[in-house]
Image: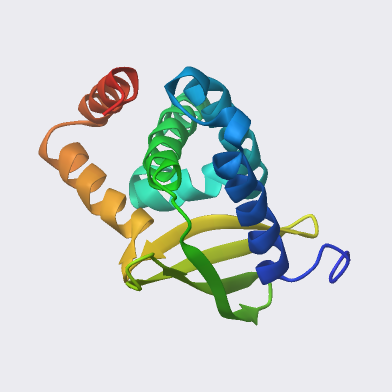
Length: 182
């Protein structure tokens, strides 16, 4: 059943993190002139490890089932872009922080990888990656930074827009956010 051959969740998160840090630390990719190339490379690495569909399903929660396949596809694309931008902005600000892997917990096909980011000023930022095993690989479906779940945060925001207005309104807002880059 492929268990074990791909490594532990921690191994896979570490491998992805190392690839990303290598990109942001590469002198040849520094500066504004290389921003598009740098982001494209980071995005490719992130896409290998993040399960955008699972994240989308969990974020829309009860509203997911009501979506058509085309709507689901569009939401996954838009939400993926939004999350990548959020994640890329954080990663792009990297300047020599230390990443400490503190442990993992696995229950069947689900796991949590606990990481601590130590800034240059010795501030410790706890990060939890929630992962799901699929085809022998571990994929991220949620990240909690300092105890705040990305998925729960967006679920609340999106639910409020859908209930208060409409799903169409949410998509309109997402498109505007993705296109404006904010």
